[in-house]
Image (cartoon, rainbow, N blue to C red; front, top):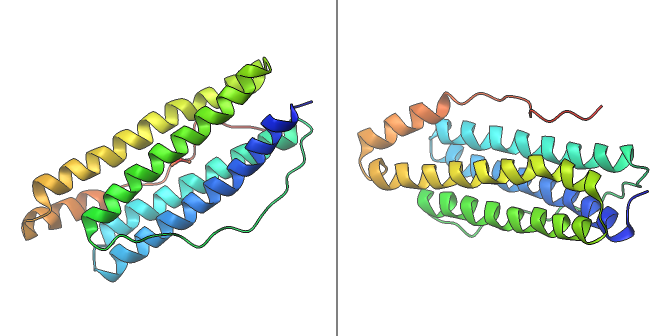
Length: 171
Ligand code: FEO
């Protein structure tokens, strides 16, 4: 049986991950509107990954006798105007998600819930990768984004990203 606070935080995380998917779809739309379909592809795949994260939290809760209560998903708060603003908003969002994962980890640790801590280990690593990918994108945009040819090549590179299912599987 999960601790009440841990279960509530995990339930809330389902919503946060689905919101992340929504936010990245909004980013994808921004780039699709701008004719940068490679960037749009990159964020659409990012949105798919976020949905996977939501499903992992959902499944974990169900597998541990928790009740899933789905709430409303907020509309994406995206004030970004430029392409670079979007990339930076992506990094800020991932840093926020990292803080949420750490928060659940803290709650699990405080009640000696080692099972949940082990489950969260995958997300701790994943967040490291998410932040690194967002940072890499910003660096590439800084280097090549102001030159039309550079932007074209970067867009081509991002068009090549393909979806792969998460390495963590919960039956
Ligand atoms: Fe599910 Fe991008 O964190």
